[in-house]
Amino acid sequence: MAETTGPSWSDIPVDLAGRILRHLPAYVDRLRFAAVCPQWRAAARLGPLPPPLPLLLLSDSTVYSLPGSKPLHLLVPCCCTGYTDVCGNWLFFSGDDGCFLRNPFSNTTMALPALSLDRIRYVGDKSVDEFYLECEEDGRLEYEPDRCKLLFCSLDLVVAIVSLWSGRRLAVCKPGAATSWWYVSADGQYSDFVGMTFHQGKLYALTSMDELFAIEVSLDHSTGDPWVTQMRPVINNPPLFIPAEFFMETKVTYLVEARGALLMVLRKMQPCYAQGVTGIAIFETTAGVQNEFEVFQANFRKSQWTKVTTLGDDQILFLRQQCCESVCVSHDEVPGDCIFFLENEDEDRLWSKASSSSCSVYSMRDGKISTPLPTVSWKRGTVFATWLFPEN
Amino acid sequence: MEVDKGKGEAEETRKVAEADRDTVTLKSSDGKLFEVSKEAAARLSTVLAGMIAGGSIDDNGTDLKQIGSEALENVVDYCNKHANSIPSAALISSSISFNTAPFKEPEEWERKFVDRLSHDALFDLVEAANFLGMERLLDVTCHKISEMMKGKSPDQIREVFNIKNDYTKEELEEIRQELAWAFYDD
Image (cartoon, rainbow over all chains, first blue to last red; front, side, top):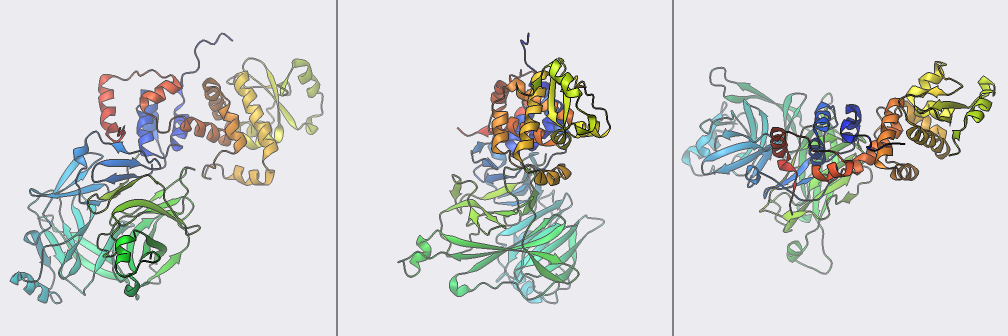
C-alpha cells in the first residue's frame, strides 16, 4: 500500500514496447516514440515491425505522415523544396548546375547527367530509328526531352522514360557524375513506355498499349556505362482499355509489385459534367473527375493480364507516376485492400483544369472513393506531390 | 469484488470434485485468491492453457508471483467479461490464428475496460497480460497505450507517462536530426 512511485514506463519490456509501436502506423509517431527515452529508442530499433505508412510530401516541403493530416514542417526544408520528379525515395532536382537526386531520409545526393539532347546517346542497330536519328542530326525534329519518369535502381543504374519526339523511350545512365550519358535504346519496334518497375529483381516496362516488356540491362565492364541489351515482349495482347476520346475519357496505367505479383493498375478518368453548363466551359468550371480503377496481374505463363478483384486485406497500393508501391498493413488504423492515389496529378489532361489537387483512396471492396485527408489539398501544377516510403 | 474469494471460500471450492471444476484459482503475489472460468483462462492465456493441460494447476491457488492483486483482479475480470461477451465459435477461430490475424479494433466493452484504468494499473495489466501470454488483452492494452501517444511530441509523451528525459547531449542532437520530419508547422 505504501506505493509512492508507480511503475516506470521507461522500463517497459522491449517486446511490449514493440507491440505498442505496432499500433503506431504513422512514421512520425514512431520517430517520436523513439525520442522519448533511451530504452524506448532501443526498443524501436529492435523490430521487426510492419512498415510505417508513407509520407505525403509536397514540393514546398510540407509533409503529412499518414494517417495524420496535420502538416509537418521540416527542420531542413531545403533538402526537399523544389524537386520536380521522384523515383522511389529519391527526389529529382534539375537546375542550371545539372541534375541530381537526393534522398531526404539520408540527405545524400547523387549527380545525374542533364536530361537534354546534349547528354543523350542513341544505341542500337538503328534500323527502325534511322529516320529519327537523321532528324536529330538535322536538329529539326527531335526536341529537348520533355517530362521524364525515373526509376532509381542502384548506385550503378538509373532508368528513365524520356519523352522524345520519337516517343517515350527508355534511357539508362550511371549516376554519380553530371558528365555521364543517358543511353537511349533505339532498337526494335516502336514502343511508347509509360511505366516501369522491378519484379523479382527484374526490370519490366509497360507501354501505353498495355504491353509488358522484360528489360535486360548490362553494364560495360570498363566504363561501367549501362545499356539496354534486350526488350522482350512478355504480354502483347491488344490494349485492355481504349479511352473514348469523344467523351474526354483518359486512362493512366501504373505498374507495381505487390506481394510477389506484378500488377497493372488501370485508372479510367472521365470529367463530370455539371448540369446546365454547356460547351467547353464545362471543363473549365468542373473540377470533378470521375475515377475508376481496375487491377490486373501479369500472368507470365499465359502471357496475359488477369483481372484481380482484391489486393488482399492487408495490402494498400500507393499510386503516383513512377512512385507506386504496395504497403502491407497490419493495424486497424487504415483498412487494407485499397488504392491511394492523387487527384489531378497529370498535367497533360486538357480538360482537367482543377486548380487544386488532393489525395483520395479507392476501396477495392466496394468501389467507393473517399478522402483520407479531407483538409489537405495543394495547388496543382505549381506544387508537386509524392509519396515517400520510410523504412523502419 | 465478487471474484475475490476469501480463504474460507477457496477451501470450500477445493472440495468440488476435480473433473467437475470449471474454474481455476489463481493466487497473486500478495496472496489474494481469484477464481476464473477455466474455459476462458485456457482460451485467452497460452500460459494458463499450458498449466491446465499440464496439470500444474494448484487447487489451493496457483501461484502467480509476478502479478500483484490489482493486476490479477483485472486479468480475471477481463477473462470473465470476455467469456460472457463473445460467442465461443468466433473465439475458437480467432484463438487459432491470433498470431497472424490482423489486430481487430477493441470492442466497446474492452475500450471501457481499459479506459477506466489508472496509468499504473494499465502498466501492471499489460505486464501481467504479457506474462500470461494473453494475446488479445495485450493487443487491447497496447492499443490503448498507443492511443495515448498519437500526435504527441516526445515532451508531451514524457509528461503523460511521467518519464524523465535522461538523454545525453549527443543523443539529443542525433534525435533532433531524425525528427527533422517531425516538427509541427505552427
